[in-house]
Length: 140
Length: 110
Image 1 (tube, chains in turn green, brown):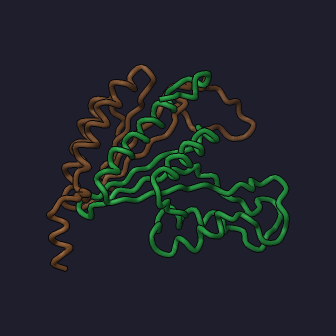
Image 2: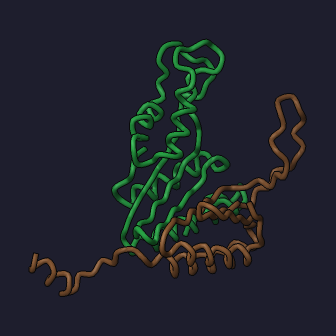
Image 3: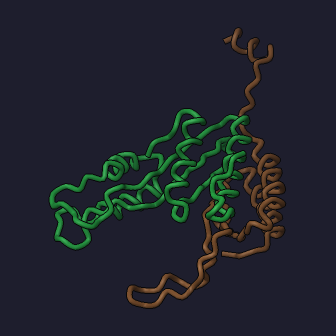
């Protein structure tokens, strides 16, 4: 799961991801005052299914990967996230399962100047979510 | 999960931030909400809800206590102003980038 290095890239990718899947995307902000850091994550939770029907050698890669991704972001989650992001199922070709894999964009910071940026992006996404479909593209 | 009104949510969120100043984290989640109040029906069952397009769901937690609220387009402007003030006021424990002589002095001594 990639941690973006620059705020601009993250903001652009986050908005793009939201516009592709508005109902699925969620935005998570985690603030730790004691450690002095702030993380923001934008994800669409789409699991990369290997196969649901055909008997496959690795049945539950997708599920375990998602769970680990949810819990252990910092430690060995990166190993599994590599598998998920590439979403190339080993073995049998899946006919109807979703190939896209999931997208999980993350940004972390310990700088006070990023609080305003994060809060602005959060507000922008909030306004996009409540605006009606016809006027979805809001230009600031 | 406690579902609150917008104002109560903001009050409780303030309390969460204050409680977590010494230890712990505050997690806030934002997601588009279509207004469904019943779980997604199984395949073959009729889907009988009308999707609303103008709401979002906000959740907050400190690991133990969970609160949530629904914001619709009518309230979003007012809510967002109060919410952003709240965030800015409480997320103040981060490093400030100062290019003043203080940092230069500390760098010189190192």
